[in-house]
Image (tube, rainbow, N blue to C red; front, side):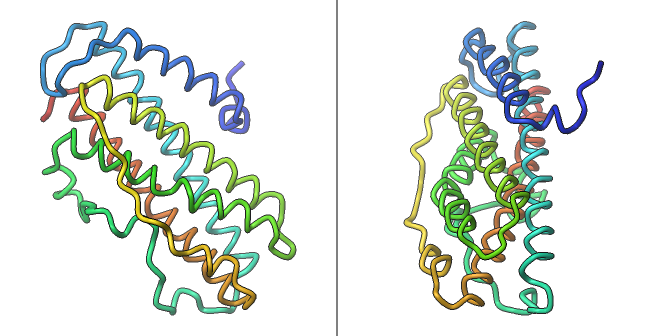
Length: 226
């Protein structure tokens, strides 16, 4: 009997799938991204990239749900969209702004950028989950969604770092101290609420970026379109 969406998206089911695919990396021979590979290696890469894009698609959907639910619960009538947004945790990264720029980036550079994008969300997501739990009337659904996204980002980090290692690349994570915690802890409820709204909006934007980069990488590396 096929799994329902709820079952597929559950942490246990997804974690088992992730572990099974990550184990395949042990049998993948390290090689430059644009060198012809044998059939078994190519098959393993295809499965692993399929899994990574699957997780990123789920993460993107969950970020959209989180933004929608938070907006409905806390931002109605406050015209947050009309305010000048605060900076995002990943604004310091040199990120391609359109599809053309993405396609011009080397697979190695895109993988390293992905690693840094995901890494830069580690601290903000920790604080998002922690501080959100103390918000008045915070529904369990919003908290559950935030925790699930935090878990997925961690899973993607493992996958991307493994891919980098297997193609013979190493990434030293770039991270700047995140300055948004003070706003999340503000005693001014409007300032605090807008900080959450903006952070979740940034998360939604970056979840789309991660998914786009992975889709491009899957095509270029698996199909040798470098």
